[in-house]
Length: 78
Image (cartoon, one colour):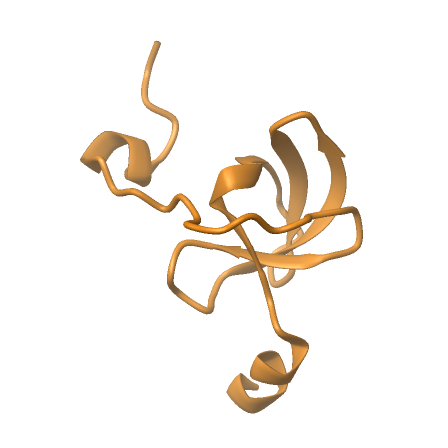
């Protein structure tokens, strides 16, 4: 099975050290960077269907890699 992301290919860990409750409608990011960020469309078991907030592209992401965005941080960055 081919590796599906740069994180998988290069062995970069983006796992959270603490538990967060992620649900549809949340804004999340993957890893330590502020961008890109995604809107959660749906959650099923350990995966989230997310939509890139800038491009509109849909992706599947492991919940353990999702980190909730703080909306104030987005206002400062914009």
